[in-house]
Length: 337
Image (spheres, rainbow, N blue to C red):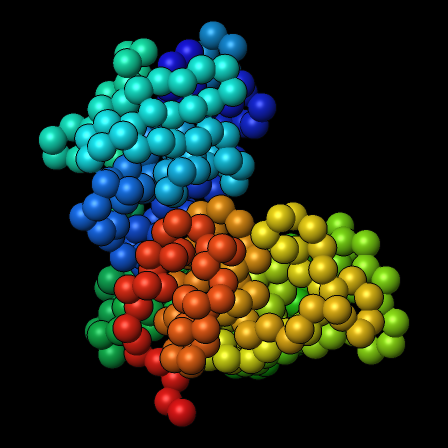
């Protein structure tokens, strides 16, 4: 048992760890550090115990304000008593925890201990045999050397599949990019964007609604739904990041269905009863730790200053704790007006 006994084995551990490690890496690299106040002391990612029957293993949880998240579900509440003491409130019990002097661990009264998750480095794909020897021939560029070695070995360079893209030719289309988004396939989306597909290309709205299992009764022309919009609605941070990196218009707007903070669907008929939303506002429809990550990616694309100011005034109730901190501290750069 214990304060860190997250769940009861309802999901396989590899899936839990893979999903949360990606979030941990992105949010630690992009979100600002918590302020030196009592409310932010415990915020962050922690290695906790995962209980499955009589077997215990380690998973990662995220503390955001009063919520404790695991596998995109809020499984417990956190109450901060002071700068070094908190109480985690779960379904079956409440357990008091004490933060270490260095802020890197929480010792729980039931004997469990959470360790602050360390940042993970991104490791490049290993170069194929012969890449280093051919670096000089490729002009000293590592990527060119890797590509040259792969080509010499009869393989496609990393990031390009021989059955999809022919070297030197643009074969991928907006349809390929849309399919990659709906399947949440990072490599396929990156290939399409690198091959020249515009990040503002459209996704078939009806297909997206089916993927989201939304019951939308839409009359007439479907709302314009770009790759970036689809990634936001799918709550896919990596997809948003790729679109923004490839110059997607983060200052565009959306006038279609979305899920509200209370879980209800809005705008499911045409014309939609909800107003047209700036995409940064749409990002607040994402729940859990992914919200802050997606908002950070959007800010990296240079949104308008007035959009950020409007959200600070009017949409704070839709923000997760760490998202509110991020927007309060953000000072640019903004889009030029």
